[in-house]
Structures are given as C-alpha cells and as structure tokens.
Length: 98
Image 1 (cartoon, one colour):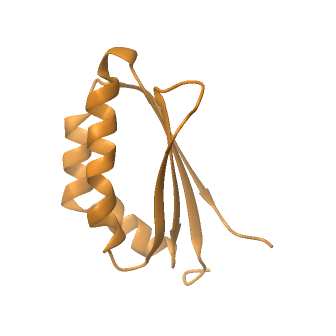
Image 2: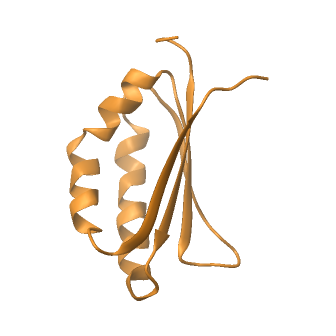
C-alpha cells in the first residue's frame, strides 16, 4: 500500500470577498508543487457556475510523498495566506481502481 499511487481531490470554497486572494494563492502553488518528488500531476480547476469554488486534481506516486508535500514550506505559507479567506476545504484521498 505504501507505494500505491494516490489521487487527491482538494475542494476549496473561497469567501466571495476573498475570491481573488484565494485564486492568486492557489495559482502560486502550481509551479513549485509540480517539481516535487512524487508529483505526477497537479491541476487546478475553477467551477463554471460558482467562481468561488476551486478544485485541485492531484496524482502522487504514493501517500508518503503527498504527505511530504503537505508539510512543504510553500503549502504552509499558502495556509497562512488564506487563513480566514475560505469557507471550506475538503481533501479526499483516493485510490485508482480501474
């Protein structure tokens, strides 16, 4: 299980008044994260109907490397930058089955 690919779906709902701040901070994560060990892909989406809703679709070579990503300085800085600016963050760890 330790070496099994991990898919993460991260759902971020920005407060309307903080939309541009959150969007800018999310975009900042992309380039650095894509260079991290174990990152297969890291794609940010914005909902067509609700611009305050963002979704990261991520694939990692294993859960341990994703956990290392979550402790990386750029992710910690992101968390500080958006503190109080989001309504909800939901992370789903998923395993490909087909």
